[in-house]
Length: 405
Image 1 (cartoon, one colour):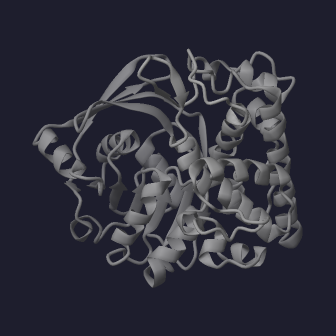
Image 2: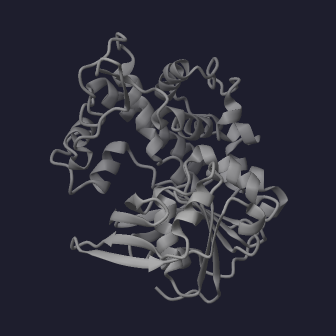
């Protein structure tokens, strides 16, 4: 990991687990200056005052189980974009998708040309929102979209120390250069900030990343599990993945096939877009969890026998008498519908692909959420303005999406 040829002035957006980890790792690298900006309540002030003049510590768990302490300190921690943004040539978002809009609006007056804007992770529609909200200044900025966070990490003491429980082996990113001419090579520089793990690779294009996101899984499982619920509280929290039923698995498979058909339609319309990364969910599990799954014969068996899912339960709220009811306001629906499923559906609509399984899922979820996205088979509901579907940003056809590249 060679040191970049110029000074990296990094802005980290956020204050949670991912922001803590990236702050500590990046601040420890030579020739890197780190600013942190949190727009959430008084988080920046609490972080700044709690850390004071002390070092920040990342406890990094290595592959052999040993833990390496990494000490460092960012230059600035603030909620003021006028203080945080100017001069930064690399900007990394480590906040949930629902918070992205506020950060884009804060960046817009101050972002400089040739800056690199990164979603770590991005979540579907990140690119559309970035182009829309950064406006003219953003035309000379590169956009980088990662599929997930690089590590499993947890804050140990807010503002002072964070633990990395493990890093992923590999992590894929899509890069849209637009008219930018960054001062550094993008992926090698981000690799330098993160360290040797995970190994960063470049995806074929940004649409493939959009159609592969985690949000594929959660809404169909919520629908399949709770569609016939009798509204009676449950004695225990049901398992989320390992409690999967046949209906859920079949629905997930159908949604996955619809996304694959969308990918094929995009590639047929624009052969320059290689969409081979968009594979069936069953194949995705066999590739990504091969050491954790004991029975990979079907999608259902993959999810039920996946050790990585041991003990993971449905999001539930406890009742006064100690029983449980589903939490339909949890991110599996509140975030994964407007910033995931509706984006998939929007891309499929532009590609001319019929999506009965997606539609069935959306109609149930939007009713439970009290929202309206899909009406009579078209994405023109009154709540489309809270989504990141391409229709919200006036994309009319697949060629419009390709031209973004």
